[in-house]
Length: 223
Ligand code: GTS
View 1 (cartoon, helix red, strand yellow):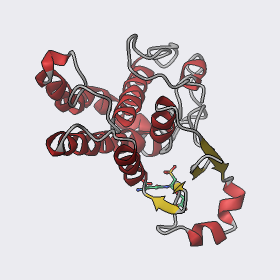
View 2 (spheres, rainbow, N blue to C red):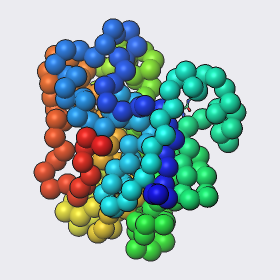
View 3 (tube, protein in one colour):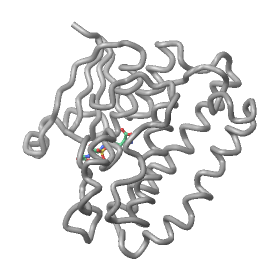
View 4 (tube, rainbow, N blue to C red):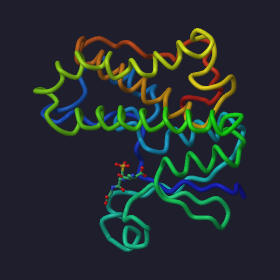
């Protein structure tokens, strides 16, 4: 029995249509389907990718909307929300706390406290970006999409700055080894950039049908 269990909604694969649209534009579906959890960048994709990359096994419990709406499971969750994560007899909620827990227990929290602080900082920045993307999809997509595209470079700038400061961009965003925030960063950037491409070229099957060559991630993207 794997020690880890992820309890979450079936949030991966085809994206939900941005509000005001019937569905994702033709031609993008295939691309988007290649990207794990792109629709809402499901909150469990980063932990799945991290576990897979580290050769860990885990169990999935998929909660349907109907099951959730019945109420008892929601009532049993600490914050009334999913994901819920189990590591043996330890039960956790809050996706970023779960990622941090995996980072600590798998030895992926930077080489010292200084790097750990930087990883925390990067991940909090990624969470902000994630909210920005989520807000665009869930709220005034048509009204806000142009502004989103215009402002995206500014939102990506801090990460670019950090990368440039670390061995001239030849290493990781923090330190010289994989850390727990990397999958969240990678996935969120892909989401943010794909959304931007979707706005600019709504009928084009670009840009991110593949992960960048040489990326450290070994996880199978069809997880
Ligand atoms: N801060 C939480 C985390 O990071 O885990 C947010 C969790 C959350 O928003 N969960 C949503 C939920 O349970 C699902 S998702 O938006 O993350 O996919 N919603 C159902 C409900 O009843 O609130």
